[in-house]
Amino acid sequence: MAVVGVMYNLKGAPPEEGEPPDLGAELDSESTVAAVALALRAHGHEVQLIEGNDTAYLKLLSNRLDIVFNMCEGLRGESRESHIPSMLEMLGIPYTGSGVLTLALTLDKPLAKKVLAYHGIPTPGFRVFSSPDEISVEGLEFPLFVKPAHEGSSMGVSSSSYCRDIHELTAEARRLIALYRQPVLVEEYLPGREFTVGILGNKNPIIFPVMEINFDAIPAGCARVYSRQFKTDWSDDIYYMCPAPISPELEALLKDTALKTYRALDCRDLARVDLRLDRNWVPNVMEVNPLPGLAPRYSDYPRIAEKGGWSFTDLVNGILECALRRNKMEHLIKPPFVKQIA
Ligand SMILES: Nc1ncnc2c1ncn2[C@@H]1O[C@H](COP(=O)(O)OP(=O)(O)OP(=O)(O)O)[C@@H](O)[C@H]1O
Ligand SMILES: [Mg+2]
Image (spheres, rainbow, N blue to C red):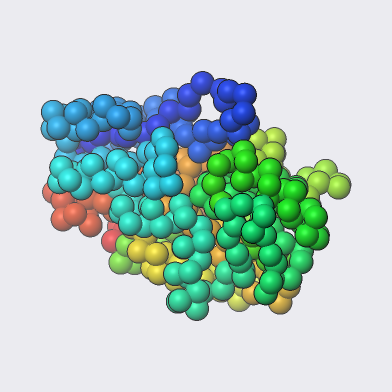
């Protein structure tokens, strides 16, 4: 049995005027935090709930924790997901999931794409702009896709992210730069099917069944984009196909690309990789989520884990057990083990 600090950032007050309407979309609801705590207690662990805010450091100093189950998306700043892990490292407290560098790198989508390119992992050609006056599409081919450079949970992603010409691109880039107060990433548009791949483990990770986002189920005329609107309005099972109806060859290629991405970015314990096919049917990586949402039956990661035979309780304890083994703390795991994941 371990003393586990469950750390999180809760959704706050609704956005004020001038703030993005989807502000805080990546933060957790109380019900998700409660579900994680319940799952850990079901396996005999003692749980302490700690909000990952600016008083967290003092609580971490005084509470005697064996390990932290980290769900903190961070409150502000371009490296916000790595703030709590930095405190934990300073205090010598082990934690679940990826480290400081990986969390900061993956939140910077352009930098993460440069690392993928170094490893020969397909990702769309791109440019980054901090001001609408700088925009030039040299070296890129329309249609293009524009999104904030440092966000998640589809914040700032909508049908107008899809741009057919320089006028549409400049208008949407101008809107996003002003609203999200950060640079935009302009990428070549991937016209093919979309998939997400969930990974759990370290030396020999488990790869859950591939999930396809079912754009054929959404109303005619809606853009084939896994937007904020899609994630909030269309959460029923018909919008998600898992396992995806694909050939064994494509399945193997998607899993292999996702695993190479996981290794290239030094991910630990868990992550979800989002991919889409380009016009030649080659899977391209759009981005990596080392802190995937864990809302039971809603977020993609627990949804696909369940299709792979992992209940929510198994999944949460599986993540913890990966981190305990990685930190040579397996004596704190009480048999029976969830499943043997190294
Ligand atoms: N280059 C692209 N071509 C086509 N569609 C894209 C491209 N980039 C992003 N998209 C669409 O926008 C969606 C959101 O993009 P992305 O995954 O980068 O954002 P996110 O906010 O980090 O997502 P998450 O909720 O997974 O954290 C994708 O799932 C996809 O549907
Ligand atoms: Mg995504």
